[in-house]
Image (cartoon, rainbow, N blue to C red; front, side):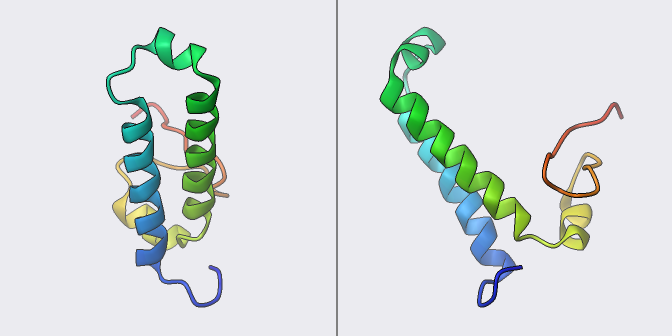
Length: 82
């Protein structure tokens, strides 16, 4: 975990990134989204922020709140077949 940051800070980063993605893509079809390079890049950046924030959350906390098993290193959150 980064010095001076709490789990709640990382969760806020995740929530904000998701809200941005929803805002950026609201009312767009996939075709419209895919054709809009600025929006695509903004969504990619928000996904990067989201991914970085997940790295700051301790594995023990992720295990407590996760509905699906995650990979050990936490770099790639993948659903496994339940």
